[in-house]
Image 1 (cartoon, rainbow, N blue to C red):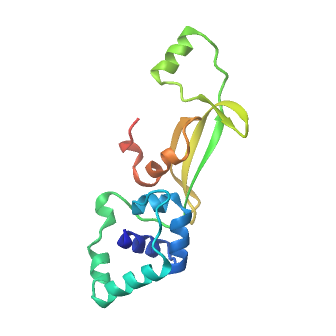
Image 2: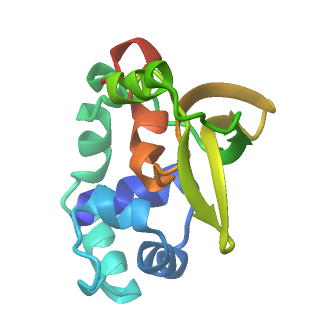
Image 3: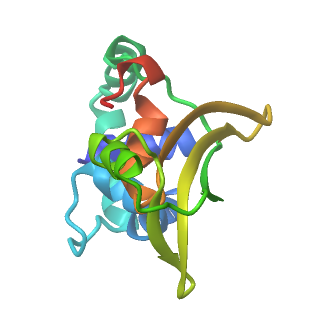
Length: 164
């Protein structure tokens, strides 16, 4: 867990204090580190001591050299934005044909509530590269799917390899 914390710190350019705060604040960091929701996070001094102990043993450089994220089909990128939008769909009619399509899963729209209002819609989830202002990936789901459920897929799983 501590080494994964160093990875996050290195990738995002965080100080030891910022690392502690970001791990407490971001559920994606907690998930990556394998922390339970209410589990305590290593404090700033513990992170600093771990990092300097690795450096004193001469292990820091060799650990980072041996780690190859690209071999695991993951490309580390900074400043990625994941966002979603609710897109209204035509209201359903209670026709047998339409109900059969819903049961077969071919209609991406479902009912959901947002700000106490009901919407029959689907959702576009996108991943944007902040630096280049390009959409790197997308996923379409029914509107009832929470953003967190597609977050990891958008950041790590290529489009052609996703479960449908």
